[in-house]
Length: 444
Image (spheres, rainbow, N blue to C red):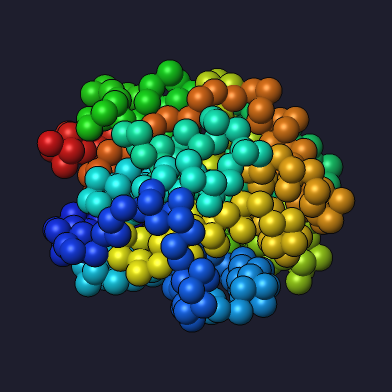
């Protein structure tokens, strides 16, 4: 998956000039102030809206868009849903062909890269005109979508790293899971679970860029500093590879072979909820808190309750953070940017829409909306809100800046070396040495 993602982002960089040529809407501030969208003159408008996720997200998103279309008869939607890896591939092709969607679900890790290549519309004029109402949104949340004075993404919700686990299994085995575990406590817990139940641990196989960053933060090191690695000492990165090497050698880590016919980014195919025996299942998985609804939905078929706690680290307070779950942005090729902005405003401020979405992407950023939908939330979503407010917020630090433009190639390298360690073809020390050596070359 990471190899594909690296190629996709290279394509974006190469084709950026094509995707920006002659398509960018001018005088957006004036148009926004005058309400110059299609609704004002009765024209029929079709907006392309894209997002990644799972089936539960797909159904809720489409229902919210259908409600908007009912309330705005001049607007119809072409909703396009994809799995994570396919999503970025399609978006890269669209950018190369100057056909970016009107409303784009955007990830924090790649927001800066799309802005750098002039692929997104600056939303600040629409905020200033009032077309996009952020009066009930904190300035700190707006700031995370701000780059060089422009606002290019509106957070859909906030979330945090979350270790999800088979609570039913662990309760039956008499095993307790504590919040804010150290990495040593997590290793001990993994061994205990394996010894008592036969279920192994999955950390973040082939999607470890977030957890490796988290581990480094817990050791006082940033993954990146500007356009370079945050450390040139291989020992700092060895701690990540050590977990895989140790787990494989001691038997408590899942075999990498179980992923050969699975999409590592798919919730429904994650070994926490997918597999026919303990050999192909795990007792835990590394996700973000907004994924709990989808994970619990997938687990319901087996009668499993999913628990939630923090990722482990040497210093969890230094490692943990609250982040925008994802953004909504407007593609630079949109012929109706004002109408696209109105959709983002609706998503942010409509209680009716959020009674459908119900925080599946994270706790709503509008304080008014978040308060209004609270009674409608399921137990799962209430658990997420409680986790954010009571576990993460009191014990976390400022999120790192977005990764540099060439980070995808570095993450691809990380996954390749991780795979080599898991298959016993390389030691953790060798992987760390190669990572530092090759990553700095890739970043130059």
